[in-house]
Length: 306
Ligand SMILES: Nc1ncnc2c1ncn2[C@@H]1O[C@H](COP(=O)(O)OP(=O)(O)OP(=O)(O)O)[C@@H](O)[C@H]1O
Ligand SMILES: [Mg+2]
Image (tube, rainbow, N blue to C red; front, side, top):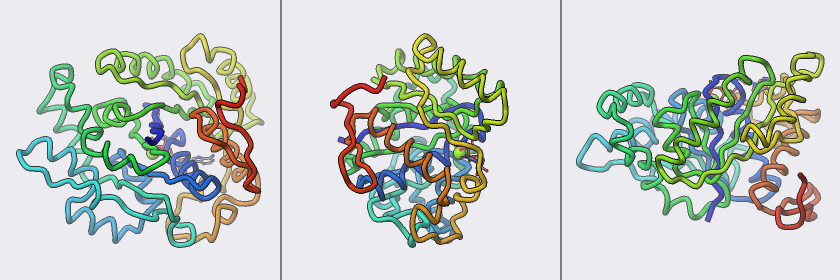
């Protein structure tokens, strides 16, 4: 049984995709886990970071992307096949990472999201629509240790399909007013979704992204976020901050062909921050955490870090 985590935030540009990619790469390369990334975002940024554009175009032409799954809900017959859609050995690191697979997003998913809402305006009357992804891929994901879902910046039907198959959701947040403002709304919308669908989804917490320690607003907002975590329902703020850095910004370019994680994320802080975040996430979802020398560090069963 995999552990499935959706990365969500209604706010755009907070680092959902960057974190999804980095977590997937660190979990696979440094922890030897088998990871599937599902790109639910019509912008297809995770797809563009993890696979070759020409190959993606061919997948689109054959209708073997996540978009086809949603289109099938309009039709009597089913075209989408998870086995055909999945891209094996994704990532630009050494031409592809063994054990890291991608379920690519599809062109026109954006239009489709609008169409789904027009055709089925009464979401509550069609709760089956939030289980399209779950029903289609539940068998196939059993082969993975971890499934990471990169969601679009909204909590609409497509994101809800991600939540419906998830054990946890993780909220990346830039510690600035506009980004923090939406957190209570996210928590309450997810809680409502859980009541409506019976999903047994848990919050994994907040991750501070694009953090600038010279910015006093960032520093004080982080303190406030940490202080309020239990009361406000997001469980925790991860220990590590992902700082604003050019390595993080540049890492997402698929045309570069780094040989390893250090070449991709640099030898400085970004590399260590993503490495630490990966360990924290694995710890909290109950997967054993290994040090970079292969030694065992901790698992959730072996003691609490709270
Ligand atoms: N730690 C960081 N330092 C500097 N730039 C970053 C960092 N993390 C992400 N970025 C950059 O910020 C932009 C937004 O990041 P990303 O695409 O990961 O966010 P997102 O939440 O997925 O956005 P969207 O809501 O549009 O899907 C990108 O240009 C990315 O390269
Ligand atoms: Mg994104």
